[in-house]
Length: 116
Image (cartoon, rainbow, N blue to C red; front, top):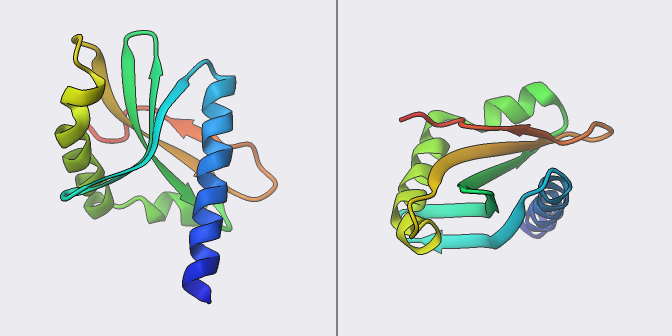
């Protein structure tokens, strides 16, 4: 039951993040893309930039920031590397972003969270 609730909460957070990014001018190209190396929550494009976006929802901003650790970022970066040829085939800039979802606050979009 807890896993199902977490799954629902994750999907809701991704929907909120996608809506927020659209408001900021991003087009959502894909959601929940899995590779053998990891998963990317959202793939978005704005102009000549493709962002592979990790979404984290927690009860507080501090907890959300702690949830995005180096291990998770490495997995997102590996998945982005495996997917980049499909979504950035025309030489677009590619980066890894994060969107933090915290109750009763606006979503926080952070660009370039992985500079690895």
